Amino acid sequence: MHLDKLTVIYFGCLVVAVILHEISHGVVALWLGDHTAKEAGRLTLNPVPHIDPFGSIVMPALGALTGIPIIAWAKPVPVNPMRMRNPRRDLVYVSLAGPASNLILMMIAALAARQLYLSNAPQVRYFEDLPTGILVLFAFAVVNMFLAVFNLLPIPPLDGSALIERLLPRAWLPQWYRFRPYGFLVLFLLVFSTGIVGTLLDPLFNRLFDFVFG
Image (tube, rainbow, N blue to C red; front, side, top):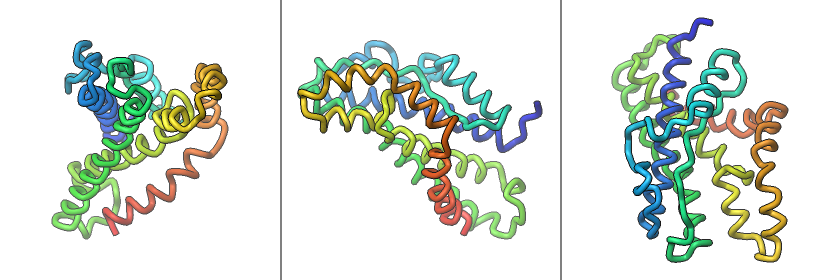
């Protein structure tokens, strides 16, 4: 099936954003005393150590080709909470580092796209005819927004589930740990069987679009 220019751009931006998301986890873990990711060679911009063949290539490519929701992930950065100074608290910081990095990257890309658009292409009639640089920056902003919001859902293995673990009374944690292995199944059902992704992201996408091109 033919992949158009926009699909290729979004695909590339998604893979880069996912890798940066994972690196941020390892960097914050290092700041908090856990050298596991550094020792594993995961604090690098080289994409090879981060790529999960299924999550980084097959799933996003399948979405791009078939029109199903495009999701992607990299290999999780290894983290050892017991090497942190305050494991239960610090693990929350490490988990939230991913969405936080995506939000920062989204803001930078959106501001840059807006500036380029206002300076170079305010009279372009069709979105696809915009200069490639603007399309790449806007796509990068969109995919980082998606990753930030999606990863804050309180479902294992997403980063938002770390907040649940932090807030739950210790007596409830054993039941939560029994649920965690099924989180991925719940996540897939939500993505492919409900409209929750569109419900969450469509209003945010519209605001981002209006900010850049309005």
